Length: 135
Length: 369
Image (cartoon, rainbow over all chains, first blue to last red; front, top):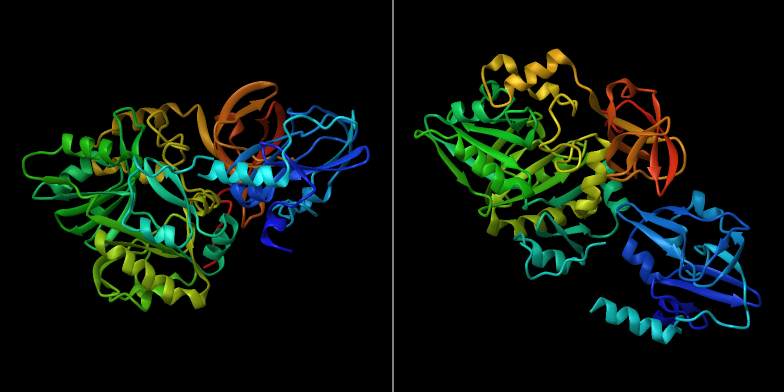
């Protein structure tokens, strides 16, 4: 795996707030990107919604806290929370260690799977967005 | 997160070295300072279990010399500087007439009439004006901050590491003692002081010597587990040890008594600025006190979050964090006197939700000797 794949995996969609979204059928898995976890530093607390809660694209659905900073999480798609990564309660550091794997946060049963939510970026677009933001 | 932009910020002599070491730089009190080199958690744990090396050159240094030096120090600080022998330092404060904090400081007695005050970076100009404003003709007050760099080496292995480079006998230096000599061949002053709750030393050097001494300590310490540390770990370490941070826990609106720092005020020494107010407040009793708490439910309290009791706002969180060594969410808050006792329960308002907290004994962390 090249470094690009580890930092900006192909096949995911990305938000300007540095969340990622991976869609399989009607269910979308959501987390924060490698760049986001690196910017935050050691993550020590993740606050997520309950299963069954409604989330709205572009609206906050939870909070992630590093030792020094509090950051809101924004939903990349609208729908109902289908599953929550309960392991993050005891092991929030998984978000740092494996942001695209064990550090996932919620799964959303998307409201409209035919239409991709607006404003999402591909891996290539997101990479350029991050590089522009850093400069 | 505030990113450092560079141009308008002040830089310590170690700025180029920070960049070389890949530190994450932020704006702290107008200075471009490292918030972390590797990670706040690993730096914090290195200090608790091995050693950490900090650049704190942004701190201010005020030199007081002359026949009236002791008299001036006694007038502007609340602790009793007459009790210091040359080679001893003490924690103290500059107070307003109201008994509130102009700043909290360290006072070093270098000779009978020669003192060094070490002050918070953001207060340096204010403190210098305050001290100089009370000076008489027979004393010289100099803001020497630009000439001094300051490093801190902290942790159980700090003495062994520093001992390899220092000309002074640091292993036998008493707590709050200091000596002048050389470190890595550079003239400097070393004191057994710190802001982490660990054994450790602070090293004062001419600004131009700092990079070489910093590199030398890193080299000597690497095999012992020493890490370069940023202000992020400095903040979590000091909070576990319940050391106050000016601008968060204490300021010109809070008094020595409210802050739980009665022990640094010595009214028996004679008059000083703030003494009368302090005596008055002591007789009347304080309405609020700074108390240490831990969260009883999930959530991290942060500076500025409201404290509530029975649905009413009764105070405010002044410092709060996840404590990396104690592994609890801890904080300090001004609470009504009736709520400030150990075991009392209240809530912290976190993003619109009342989260349970309780007052606990402090310090949250105390090293075993």
